View 1 (cartoon, rainbow, N blue to C red):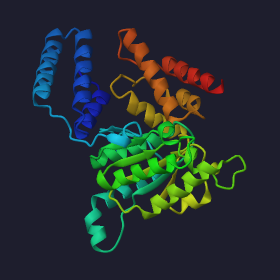
View 2: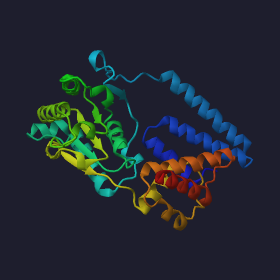
View 3: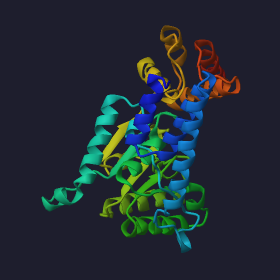
View 4: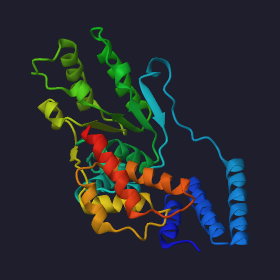
Length: 324
């Protein structure tokens, strides 16, 4: 019989319309039934999953998204994320602000009819692994928009004027193709203009970005993310509609992230009093990576049960790797 966590995961994947995850979870339930000696029930579940996948493949149609062409080729990578905000464990103030952005975006025309502009220029700041990049994917997934990631190493060149020209191409694309445009590691172009280590070309690029951002009146979302907000030019902050600050998870949020990631496994025996302290100082990404390591260990041992010792060992391994 499916565990409560497995049922919750099945319902969550259904609500998110994530068919592939739903079927994968169903197969995990089938495997659990087989281990308990319920061979007939396991076989019926596997047959149903096979039938569902055949129907899904037969009816599947490619999602029409605008693929970068011409001079934009290599500057943008494009995907259609299925990530949702419910997939993320966030501090409540951050979740509330992102939900506000989504509400405004979904009422875009209504707000503009009253002379109001929806929030659509976001600056995300905070340590690595705290959910900034995933936030861009979740916004795209919630709004069913393509996610365009700006490839910075292709954008920034050593030739005078070329980077600014490429930047203009990107902002022209914002007007033509509505989507979520992510400038990750934004400090590469947003560095303080007065910095003594800066070079003239980067200052010109930053000036161009500020000008393009201020003039942009498209329906696209611009999301800039950085791990180093202290290096950013002060003029940038007032050009964005919202600055969202991320931080490492609290012990309670780390526990929620673990429970969410291990929903398809039997984690009912975990000693949270022992586990919570071992998450201190780790990012969301590091906690999730530890969960994945413990889950793979459980699968290799032919069990769907996660033990406290397995998870603690995986978390400690992540801590040692972080400390170098």
